[in-house]
Length: 215
Image (tube, rainbow, N blue to C red; front, side):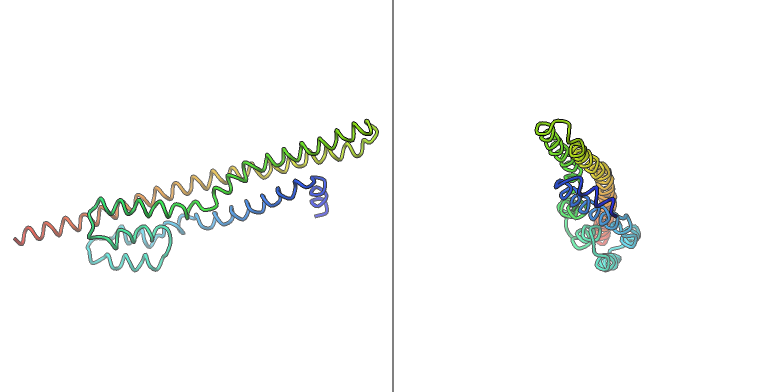
């Protein structure tokens, strides 16, 4: 712990925003690992009820399952289940509108990771420049006699660079990982939404056929 505090002190004032960036990035990464779990987003119970939707009588059961499992997937599925009387194209349009809103929920915080990944190395570079300025001030004032002070400022410059890169690189990896995971979840939701629309449409076609036969 003392060594960490010593490094923090040697890094200078730029270490404060760097530490804040690391804390924020870590908090978002932990939160996204939890909220972007496939089973948490693509709820198996909702998937099962959509796949086993065989008659219009099953729609009420599907609605109740969605209401018990609130989330991105259920919110989108409810659009189709509660608007079965609408034309197929209108349901698809409603799915698309709701989907755009729900994607915001999935991607919330991911943009912050991108920002931290970009600015952390730049903050480290700024710390490097400030450290080198101090080092050159010592050289211009005292020449090479104050070697200890000179070494301290160069150390400050190097520490901020290392810390900035140490934060930026893993944060960038996490950003790309969560972006891909969110996109894959969106594609899966679209697949099940299309399946739901197809089933709702088949119910309508079957009903129309039955009405024609009765006449």
